[in-house]
Every structure is written in structure tokens, then in C-alpha cells.
Length: 265
Image 1 (tube, helix red, strand yellow):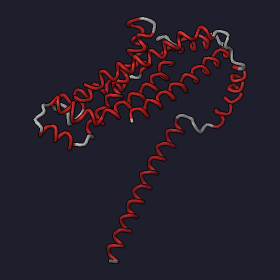
Image 2 (cartoon, one colour; image 1 turned 180 degrees about the vertical axis):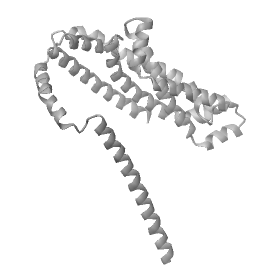
Image 3 (spheres, one colour; image 1 turned 90 degrees about the horizontal axis):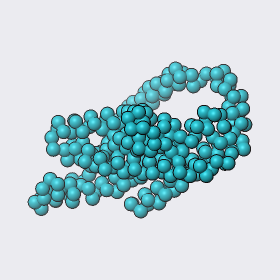
Image 4 (tube, one colour; image 1 turned 60 degrees about the vertical axis):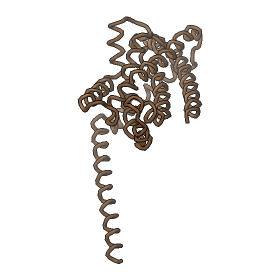
């Protein structure tokens, strides 16, 4: 009995020691990176404080004089986020089925699908926005394409992970009933992952709305284009007003997405 107790204590000590070493390694890496980028450079940070205070002072009071001109860009931003998310979800579902080990038709197809998702995810949407602006011109279309393609990489990965972790019992029961491959996916897999897919899609829509404001800064339309224009002519009071409008819109989108998530639970 005593030996079993000692063995448990020894295992706990080893686990604690291993965890402590891992935590120390992570903390060391974080510290080195922070020093490398100058996060602990107090003198440099202190030099920037007066400039920040001066800039914030120039932003007040916010100037809403041109608020009527922001309605259409805001609608463009909202439409861009919705269309980009819809594009991503449409293509993510079949790619996720090919990129999940339990639904892919062949290991080679699995590797190719994973490579596509990794490739789309590795290119920032801002870079994609610049490329599409050069390809199709200014406006909301390049923003939709950039947000949609980048989102496929993220959404498809989450969808594939959800598909790989389904309960196998309903899948086996569907196969035992004589269902073919597509019927197994439709009746045995998708009903299990649809709530997770809906949740991921809504979260991605939230992200895409925020990202679409940045897309406007590279010429992809929306409220970000207005924000960039005010920054270029140093109209900081108008910049603050646009930022407040964006904050209100982001809050409304977050509230709506919370309602939608409750509906899908």
C-alpha cells in the first residue's frame, strides 16, 4: 500500500517538474521575443507618450459633419463581410470533407486538400486584397474575394477538425443500414457537425466584418476607405468619428452573432 502511495507521489512530482520545465521554456521564449522587438525598451516607450497624448488631443471633439457620406461605405463593409463569409462557407464544406481523414476518398486527396487550406490560410487577407485590387480594380469585389479566399483556409480547417471528431456510432449505423458514401456523410456526419459549423461561420463573420474595415485601406471599398482618406489629410477629429461609428457597428454585429449562436445551440 505504501509503495503504491509512493509511486503516485513520484508520478505527481515528475508531472509537476515536467510542467514547470515546459512553462519555463515558454516564458524564456516569450521574454527573448519581447526583448528582441523592444517591448521592454522603457526609454523609447516613454518618448512616444507625449506624441500619443498630443495625437489624442487633436482627435477631440469627434467630427460627424460628413456622417451621411459614411452610410453607403458602412453598407459596403457589411455586405462585404456577409458575401465573403458566404463564399468561404460554400467552398469550405467540400474542401473540409476532402481534408478530413474519415471522409476523404484517398490519402493523396487528403494531402492536396490540406495543402490548399494551408496555402489559403498562410496568405494574409490584406495581401490578397492588394492583389485583387490590382486584378479587378477598386471597390467591394476585391475585398469579398480576399476575405472569402483567406477565410476558406481557416473555416475549412475548423470544419475538417469537427468532421474528424464525430461520434462513429451513428456513422456505423448508417453504413449498416446500407447507405452509400454520400448518404453516410449526409445522414451520419453532417447532422453531428452542423451546430459547430454554424458556430464557426458566425464567428468568422464577426472577424470578416472587422477585417473588411482594414480591406478598405488598400482600395477595397467600405468604411476603411473613408478612414484612410481622413488619415491621409490628417483630419483626426473625423478619424475619431469614423472609429466610433465602426465601434458601434462592431458592437451591433457582435450582439447579432450572439443571438444567432443561441439559435443554433
